Length: 150
Image 1: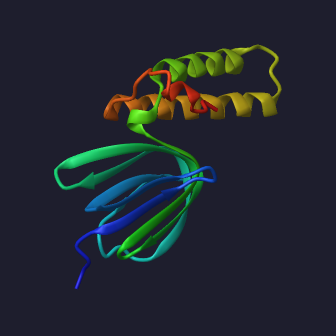
Image 2 (image 1 turned 180 degrees about the horizontal axis):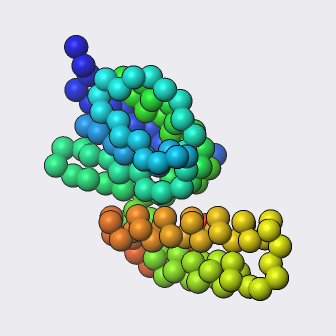
């Protein structure tokens, strides 16, 4: 008999971001998005950078997830991410500014490969934050500006 819900845990080195029972979720794995329903086969996967979407009742909620690992079991998913934020925690103005800085850094002529790769990673992270915020209502409040944008 399949479980009716999935216990979703999202943890970063700094904090416990989320603990919810959900009906389904989609998360950014290293090579594309992975959908999980109750009863999913056990696996461990590398995470990429993107939006983790989860469904709880009639609601759809969003978080950014940036690198790390996920363990998927039939009734539980544990996400161990380097960085993660709920959509409503994202400071949109600050993320836009970070994206503009990263794009300018990536476009500099004569940039070495390591610097270029780092700038591209910053662009990817800022873009993921903005996409997540647009889905779930990020803000620009002073409280949110304490959050890191790298």
